[in-house]
Length: 100
Image (cartoon, rainbow, N blue to C red):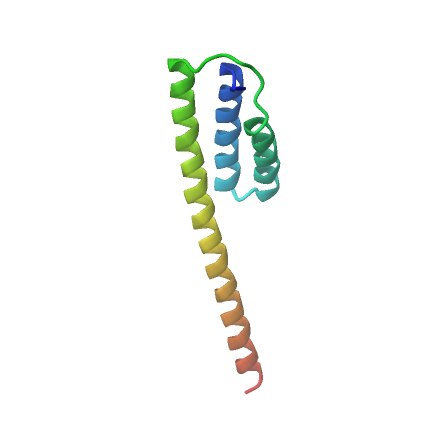
């Protein structure tokens, strides 16, 4: 069975941190590119070394980052959805005002 090496897990953590930062800044293009790279590495492990305590720690940290990414993405989607509703409501109000 193939497993991620320490270096790959470190790289996954780095990509996850960079993705969190990009999402926090609203840089969707960078976040999507970082996610593409992260997904490629996540699903294409290279190596056959057994899981040791360092890997287990890195995997736990990676899981925490993935959970943080999911929460942040859900919040951003909720905010974007709310913003769209506000824009539509503003457009309707503007139309109603201009027709008076």
